[in-house]
Length: 98
Image 1 (tube, rainbow, N blue to C red):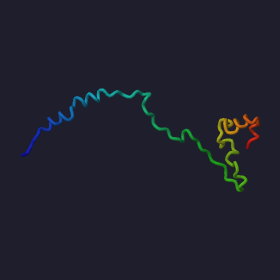
Image 2 (cartoon, helix red, strand yellow):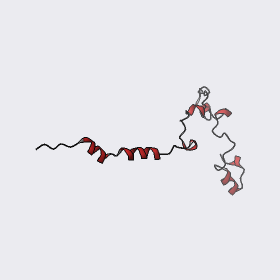
Image 3 (tube, rainbow, N blue to C red):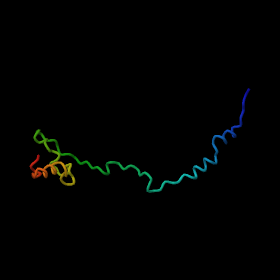
Image 4 (tube, rainbow, N blue to C red):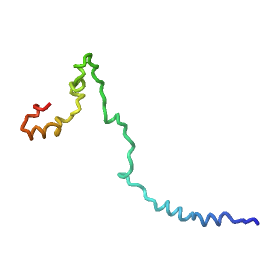
């Protein structure tokens, strides 16, 4: 026995076109201030200049990058909490701890 059904009746039961259109109409546009901005490449924010040449002796390797002010890690002044708090507690000058 062969069962035949009309495709349009099943389509109406499974997926009502009107409800699909209503869902699309109810979807709101995302406001401009909530949209995701495109990713900016890191090259815009981070500028890496050339390093000085590598010293010939091992003594010259000690601090060879930090001797140039542009290559120092502490860009915004001295570090606040490495030695300062301990020196204040002990009443030592910050230069006393190396």
